[in-house]
Image 1 (cartoon, rainbow, N blue to C red):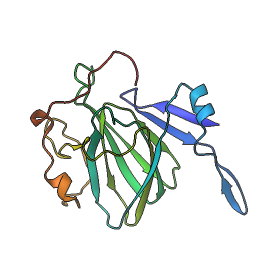
Image 2: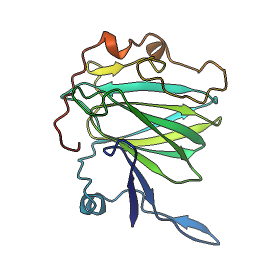
Image 3: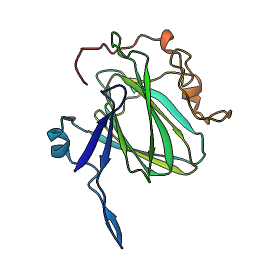
Amino acid sequence: MLDIRPLDIPEVLELKPRKFGDDRGFFSETFNRQRLKGQGVDIDWMQDNQSYSAEVFTLRGLHYQEPPFAQDKLVRVLRGRILDVAVDIRKGSPTYRRWVALELSADAFNQILVPVGFAHGFLTLEPHTEVFYKVSAPYSGEHDRSIRFDDPDFAISWPLDGRDPVLSAKDKAAPRLAEIESPFVYSGASA
């Protein structure tokens, strides 16, 4: 079984797999295509990715890939804790430029589904954090894009406690949303 809950932007979902435990530990089915399809999530997952961040306040994002390599993402934390953020960049969407955030952790054992048309990023809240995620299209460097994590048009409340985040060179040089042409257009239907 899998509990699914829409967030404030209803296309972005929190998923919580059930755990079955005893004195040895636990077992959980963290992904099952048929069960997800039965609950309205029908995505052809293509690739698994894993990241490790040594330092707390490592910020990865905001990332997306342009079509035809646009990606749905199903994200979970294997070790540690993150604040995961999805920003709607679909032109014409009633939630355009709005963002939702969800704390994911190994302890909470939850996941977030970030659909195509959203920029995605996360901030580590503990050192030695490992994040695992499924994507619906392979990586394409030619289609890989970033938007500034601190774009004032989003005003994301990153819990940095006055510190600067640890960023990649790519994320430091990322443009604001106003400086790019989003390739995503809201269709009026869920992703």
